[in-house]
Image (cartoon, rainbow, N blue to C red; front, side):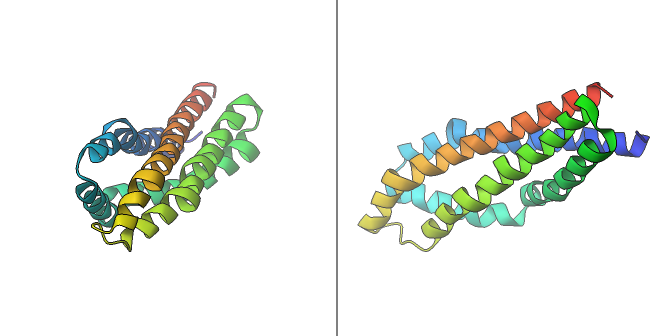
Length: 161
């Protein structure tokens, strides 16, 4: 493996962990904190967070890991092969499906629904407590685990080269 490719792979391990760390913060304490605020305050805070997340470094890393993962899948599965390559390819697959796929199919639709709601409406408050919080947090925890597994698989794959 070339030194540049090795550095790319090592940075990808760090990026998987970075994205997973952001998701961990949400599952561990941010969402619990929002449940302890007034329902209106929690909804407004989450609406603001969902608007801001699209504008910063996090989104660049989160989305940038998709093509990086696809390259790692091909490199690990086709070029490297054997156990190390399969671990590397597995890292990419887990990120694409368990993090990006879950985001697109589960978290984003909940965020989109919440974005269009009036925070003070009773229907919004019912959606927030009965649907949004439990489902969003569950799927966010899946994303957290997927990022951690991706980082570990890629790290173990690199250690076996």
